[in-house]
Length: 431
Image 1 (cartoon, rainbow, N blue to C red):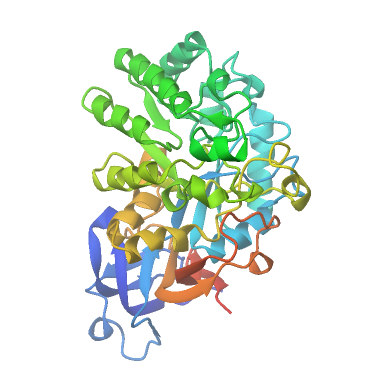
Image 2: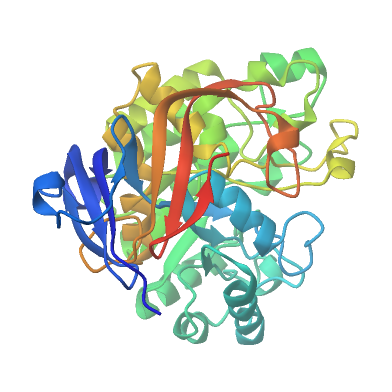
């Protein structure tokens, strides 16, 4: 039995890939593909007898592409699995995720990629794009088989939670990535400089008596890698920056080297003051920096120095977080609140709405070279419907992720996903 065509009218559609920012509609064909999108789709242009969904007052965005997600499979299913990840993602309008390879075992061989892809097909409702490690066991010493893994469908390479510390190894990685046309994604952190650190190095760390992580730890790795890229320019993405120092360096280097830059929604929406009295749910990597750093990152987006916003969704079970600050696991779950938290920057006038949408749909897809994050004719109908002004409060008991370690418990947000579609099928509807 084939599906019927679906018609959605009178929505404000934003699709940066096709420069659409207008009131109009979309038509989904019988195969779950986009047949038409934009202002030309209206009541006068569809068959008279066809039923349609009237979305007056609502927005349609392409399905969000979240470029930094820890999926939990294999090895950490008790924190998150593909089913719970799918439910949480869909509630946040996310239809495609790029999963980190820091699993157990790590994703560094063809056999594990096979397992991940099978598992994704069987259990996930969203599109899973796994990354493989840059180095064996993510230990920073021996490169993985870029060519073999790319042929298996791996979209990029990263050691995820770690940086490659050796300049010699990094130089070889860049050469190899250039030869194979692979994407390198670096988590920028000098491990010697950040050793033992837990939050931003500054007044707050001194006041709380917690060892700090200097913003130089981030800048030094970026500086080294961009210097290597001046010799051989492979596809290279800085996973997430957190400081003004890094941004100033990126601005300086942009003229000589081609690369892209990401930022975590946590660093865009929060600062070190939010840690308060040892809130372990705000123990993050990179750490929350100063308010000046946060404001400079907003400016960086508006100056086109930052290309992508990610949720940095890292589920941790209660036991891993209800510990002293020094013992608590690093990371926060965030895929479900990702879009709503990003919309804060629109509501307070900091970033234009179409810019936010570009950084979470079109740009990540372009960097990854995947046909997602757009409403192109013939593309899979992955999209979300948003009530952009709907107020709600983040309550961990209402979150669909297996782990409830949200960094913004109790925060009042404005803007909520009401429906999410994948391949033209409605897979989430706000109750």
